[in-house]
Length: 300
Image 1 (cartoon, one colour):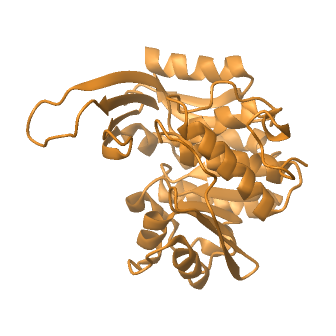
Image 2: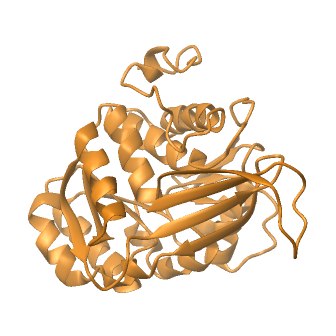
């Protein structure tokens, strides 16, 4: 996805022109996670769909240049490459998000068939809920058949509902409090802990539920635990959730348990908010060994 960001220079006023600072970058939930993983040294293959346009070419070439395997990226002339526009308030919180993601509806089970010979070799497979419901269901079945761990990022509340009935098939869910509430239909969950409990009641076995700077909850083995966020001085929160997922997965791939892996994800998310980029520019495999002002005992 091609990202455009507009940072308000004064408090936003609806219905009129507002002064902003504009920037653009390569984005998208799955793409951001993939770039983080590659930069952390995790062997990563990226499967998606882009338009037959310059934006799609640039997105694919960047990931390939960083070291990702991009042979699984499909091209479509039906729709342009997905685009996301973020309007940020003066406090850097998202005021309005606008997305043209119709192209993802063209990623079908036939595309999954073509990708599977390569994808079936993976230790972990992460999908985001931009995929169609049928593709997510087919992917869950295929992961079960090969023994691959199936992780899912909900992306947004409306897209999270695609996971209805799939709780038992998801090995690890990444979501936030609001998205978890939408998924479970329990809008009474006022914090990440209660949202994680609702996910447990809905059939999910493991989940990480974030709640911005308040912290995050972990659901594992039937129990829910609460964890404080890593302190940060944010300048732009775009990409922080994707960094959280990537940091967690990178440490799970390295053999860490879910709690220390999620703490690593929280650290990477915090550092990502302290840059204007969606992915930490100097991220490398050394990050968890001290390169990211790592906490004692974090690196394995």
